[in-house]
Amino acid sequence: MRKKVGDIKAELPSGTIGPFFNDEFGDTYGIIYAFTSDGFTHRELKDYVETVRDELLQVPDVAKVVKIGFQDQKVYIEFSSHQLANLGISRASIMAALQEQNILTPSGVVDTEKEQVVVEATGKFGPDENLRNVTVYAGSKKVRLVDIATITHAYSDPPQPGFRYNGIDAIGLAVHMRKGGDILALEKNVADKMAALRADMPIGIEAHLVANQPKVVHEAVNEFMEALIEAVAIVLGISFISLGLRAGTVVAFSIPLVLACVFVGMQIWGIDLQRISLGA
Image (cartoon, rainbow, N blue to C red; front, top):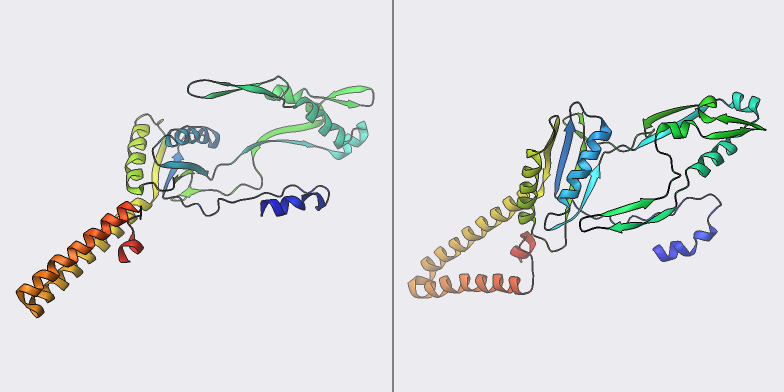
């Protein structure tokens, strides 16, 4: 699909952005945590949640951790069309001045034992003062951007998909297990890591377990195993009653032996222990 769509990309109308591909829509997330805060801004909570995400990515059997419900901060520049017309300034000239100032040039990466440090050249916007002092030309005159426009910081409008916990705005972390992992072992490892993180968690930030698929899996497998044991016991009991002691004893040994061989075969061929495989 990527190749076919890529082949016709040049035929799309001018100004088309994309196409974009999402080939991870089938991923499932067995463990989801919600992070709420009292006394912290959304950006501060997001920064802390990203720190927790980095820690969870180091947990065994974790393939990836996805953030849910975070809002990006943006800088909005608003100006009056009448004022720009009086000064002889076009919107295109303002955009050009901003793009020229905010040029990002890759400068390399420094690899250390624990992380990668990105090296950036000067030129991109830093403090608000840099943006306010961008020079725009009005004929032969120079005008500061702050003199002709209003610069504000706000979150995305319209807002991005949100995430709530008991009616409170929150940011979620969804844990995806690697292929072939043990979801019950994943639950223990993630719980141990979260317990360690909670010990150093800032006062006002709380983590809540929203979804816990391992618990559901554990209960489902246990429920099936109980039903399986009961079924075997009933068959053995009926065999003793209907076939007598000698023939019943043969059946009593054959059924557990067959089941034992099946479990050994599942282990050898890597068949997971779940409802369908157990039923088969």
